[in-house]
Image (tube, rainbow over all chains, first blue to last red; front, side, top):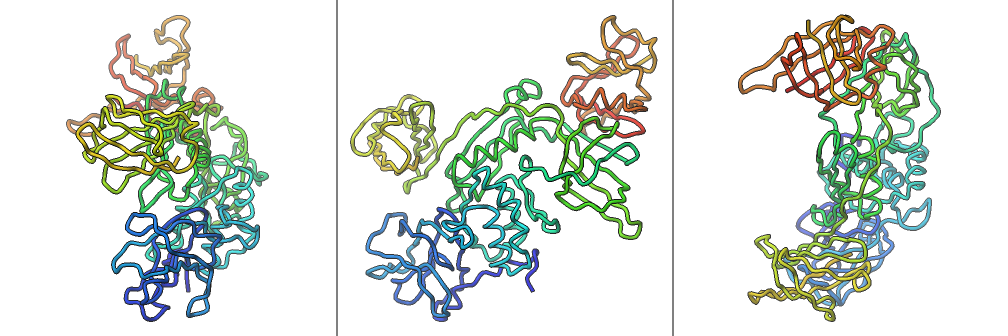
Length: 426
Length: 103
């Protein structure tokens, strides 16, 4: 029987019988990409997902955009729905075949399944078969919909546990995974506060602890992963906190975020909490049994900070019928968070790199060689039309009007004769 | 006579009693219960000391509800600074408030 601590029970290609290497068949969510699995010995049929999908948009073979294919939602030899790409001619033996597309459909809400609550329920209930009713993700689903938080990614590592996948998903969007709570996930910090079940007053034993080591004033969030590496970053800071505490940086990775808008939302909520002193509060000897995610209000002389706060940890003494809870209570006002940079980093086939940073009205592209050093004085041609030269720092700038959101091709000719082409996604 | 001074706006002096020679106009709070041992070790953790403040009625809690983490803090004895560092941790409890200062 599958438990949260069990490996995620993905089907493998062994179910198709004739293929030699059993590999987990992925589940895809949102606009995402990943490797395809050879379906049969013809090497013309390849599976992208273990379910029907909204679309498969691009196919890449050994790093090159491929043609001569068509996709369809079909049933495999076992009668199971899969998303298949069929090539007009066989793919070379040993070739690396990947695709990008739009994954699983949300049968409840319609459209692409990108709501983190919907994805969480799908992983727990439909893939893992655990007894989590849909209602237990209703709060999380509503919070994410209200904040327009969407996710994209794949469940494809058959060695991961169910709990690990759920936690990575929740961590990515700044949420708490609490499987033994009625609402098994909720946004925190931030998010909606349910009605308080208890007011903590004098008479309840309360200890609060705040440590300087917990402070973060400069946060970099890496996201939009491909082959496990981030393609985009956002960096935010809190100038007022930097002036008081100094620059205290942290880098985190959000494997389920693919959009800059969502990355900024999540990083902002996290930094609003982390850039101010936060009390780790323990309250003991409560007679009322509280659950994770329940809200309590504080009216206690030991910690004169009011308001409602979520229970984030709980210990129930079943013999003494007493309960202890843990809260995290921020001190001081919510700080102003500043977006420092939002940039894209793409590595082309030949190891040279181009990073794209958006500034008001322009895209700044930094060209580096395979040694990581900037290439000064290189002629950079954008989409075969406009050519500008990099400066001493390897930077070249194009107006946003010439580089709107989407794909662009940069042709680079370095002073030493090196030439290469880079496709960037803005 | 020694006491804990936390620099900031305002600078606060946590003294044992009101006779402590704090400069006029500076905030003085007769809440200092004890100063813990000053610990230091060659090649070990930074020198540190924990001050314990009385918290009857929550007076110390009210002063430190927004804890001065990272603020410069000094132990003053007979008018001289004998230890200086920054506030690394504050713990609030009914029986006292501890302030850990680390060099």
